[in-house]
Amino acid sequence: MSDVNLIILLSTISTGLILGSIFALVAVGVTIVYGSIWMPNAANGQFFVLAALLGWTMTVSWGIHPAIAALLVIGISVPLSYALEYVLVRRFYDVPNRNISYFVLSLGITQILTGIFSFTYGRWSDQFQLPPLVGGITFVGPLPVANNRLVVLALALAILASLFALLRYHRYGRAIRAVFQNRDAAALRGVNVKASYSLSFALGNAVIFAGGILFALAYSFDLTVAWTMSITAFAIMIIGGPGSVLGALIVGMVFGFTQAAVSTVASPTIAAFSYLGAMLLILLFKPSGLFAR
Amino acid sequence: MTTVAETKDPSPRSIGHGLPLACFAAVAFATPFLLSGNRYLAFVAGVTMIHILWASGMNLLYGYTGLMPLMFAGLAGISAYMVVGLTAAGWSFWLALPVGALAASIAGTILGLPSLRLKGFYFTLCSLVIQTVVTLAFVYFSGLTNGDTGISQIPLPSFAGTPLSGLAYDLVLAASAVIGVVILMVIVQSTLGRRLIAIREDDELAGMLGINVTGYKMIAFFIGSLFAGIGGALYAPYIGFISPRSFDVLISMNIWLMVAFGGRGTIWGPVIGAVLLAPLSFLLQEYYTVKDVLYGLLIIVVIVAMPGGIAGGFKRKRREAAAPVDVAASRRSVK
Image 1 (tube, rainbow over the protein chains, first blue to last red):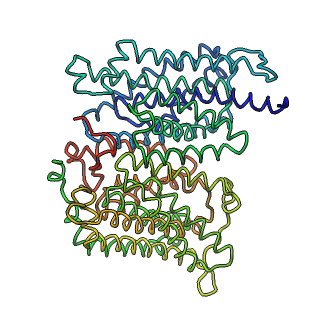
Image 2 (cartoon, chains in turn red, brown):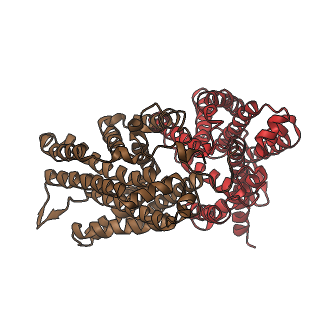
């Protein structure tokens, strides 16, 4: 294998890993919310971009260190989620077939945020770039990789791992999963269902925000990322199985590699076509997804 | 399924609309003359007419058949691009219009096939994916569509050799809106309409009563997409410019909002919705992005406080909070 091909291969793998872990983060956030309160959050892409834009404001305009800015952004998501939950989401907890209402609701939120972004950030710049977390370059074989992206990758994987551990072993995680499986039985066993709903809504959004800020730290972005991310996260959730965290994780990684590989040989549009096609097939023939609980 | 007994059939309210129809037709045809002094307002009125046509088509699908297709604008786009392509190739507009509209209908019928398997949220998500694919295709096949740049300077169609004046084309648009509403009224009062309503209320029950659910859903998609296609074909030369952004998912949502905000499943609700909402983006002018915020807020208001829309009023809030009477394909609701 010649050096050039090896570099292309390695760069595809590294891009695939970073994109895959960020896709997985956002999809896990979406699937936690869908699995527990049955809300398909179409606004996930807008939340993702909101996190990235807040990070940009904090670092570029206010000069805060990116690491602190990232923590602040994720911190901000918690009161935001609770406010949103209190004002809008809570009203539908007892409505049967609430997923369609939630879906339209989140499309409304999407449209509001789209409008707000286009007359604020959209006027200031086309392309947004955050300062790196750390400087320097590491050589992986012949390929130079920015240390910054390696740190982002490590952070994304660490968040995914701790999320997995939280859901599996901690008692809050167990309560959330119990409500995933059977709301009535969990309530009978003493789980505070409403509290676990708002907790999972906040947790899911925090994970989406984390994905957004990490993406912004690794790559420059523009406002059109939002819709692509929304639909990608949905594709991952549907293929992986709605409510399945493991499915979102695996399919998210696969999508990251697909995106990286197809973008190298063809174009990002072809990659989008391919996973939207995969999503349609799954929707039609196995709507419970590949990793259904 | 207790909801079936409780849900009021909205059709009795929509029968006997002779007088409103006459008023609507009179206003629609008078507006171009009244506004002929002000080309800009006449233009806004013309765009509103196209939206009335679109909202009526969406109403047939969403209001009467109980399906929520978010690919509606994509279908209009298919027709618009086709008509622009054909007229550029030398076809007469009046020949290209039915061809483009028919293409949109056929596309809509095929793309509506998932509705046979998927219900509620899953169908809406599926249609959203289709809409996204269609938008991406408009961008990707730039040889036919000129990509993101769009096609500009589309001429107004000519009739008998002379190009139509703005006023004449406004009248064509008014006529299409009136005809669209009349067709919807005829459908709703016919056996077809009653069967579509039966499918909306409970498609399993409708199937057991001997209604061909598959066939009627396809018919609904064919007719609804025809509305989308005719609207798209008329839209392109009127605005003079089309791009993938003219037919993206936000436009689909806007048309849906006109139906839901006006009152789904009523003839005049969506017309009122279109009249109130369609001119907004033009009247706001340079603050047009405020429109997105406003539309988004209205979507939330409709979902939270007024599922019946303006025509349904606020009073049935509690009982109808469950919006579409559908059960998701793979999960049963937990009470």
